[in-house]
Every structure is written in C-alpha cells, then in structure tokens.
Amino acid sequence: MRFMVIVKANQESEAGVLPSEKELTLMGAFNEELSKAGILLAAEGLQASGKGARVRLSGHKRTVIDGPFSETKELIAGFWIWQVKSREEAIEWAKRIPAEAFPKSETEIEIRQVFEADDFGPAFTPELRDQEERLRMHAVKK
Image 1 (cartoon, rainbow, N blue to C red):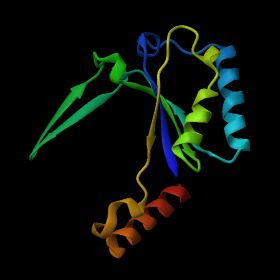
Image 2: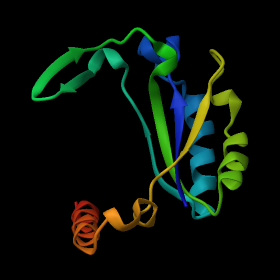
Image 3: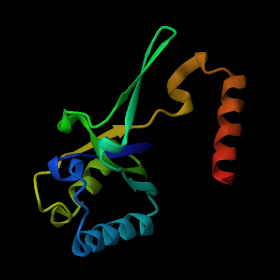
Image 4: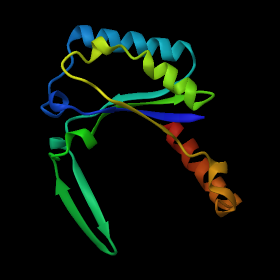
C-alpha cells in the first residue's frame, strides 16, 4: 500500500521561513531511517503558496488564481510517499517524525492512501492499465 504523508503548511512555511541546519539534519536522519526500512518512495518540500497558482476548471472555462492563498491550514508544505503494509504502519511511522524539526509551531501531518489500479474496478480496463504502466515507466526513465 502506498500512502502520501502530507505536512500541512503553517504561518512560517507560508512566510518562506526556511528550516535551520538542525531541523534539516533531524529531517534528513528521519528520511535515512525511512530509506533503510525500504518504505521511502519520495520526499519533497514545497515553496510557499505565494509562488504558486491554482487553475479552476469550470466546463470549458479555465481561471488562473495566483497565490498566496489565505487558508494556511488547508495548504501543503511538503510530503512523503511511503510504501507500507497498512494504514496502521503509516501512522506508526508518522508518530516517529521528529517534532524538533518543526519547533516554531504546531504541525499537522495528514496520511492519505494512494489509489492502486485494482481500486478502480472494471472501469479501469486492460487498455487503461497498459497506458498507466507505460506512463509510469516513462516517468521512471526521466
């Protein structure tokens, strides 16, 4: 099972406050632990929403909304993708995230399971599965 583990944004991350060397060291050590356990597939931090944009789709109309976005509690500051055996295992790993890496304020971590091909049932035809596999292989090659 794959899970996206989402680090929610806070006032500091949205203000562009960068982590200290100590905080980066703590997070690096945790990421090493995830890697050695064989569960880490990806780990990235995101720039503040002020450097981002949203594209709203409404029928054929497309509207671009430039950041920053006001609802900080709804924003993402970073994420991991983990391959684990269960939701419970993902939760146990999330409990081990070093709080000292986020000393400036309370941080919330959200855990969401990633859809797998079989989750889509018969609507995900063999042709669509083949297409998905080709796209994944192409992405891996890059």
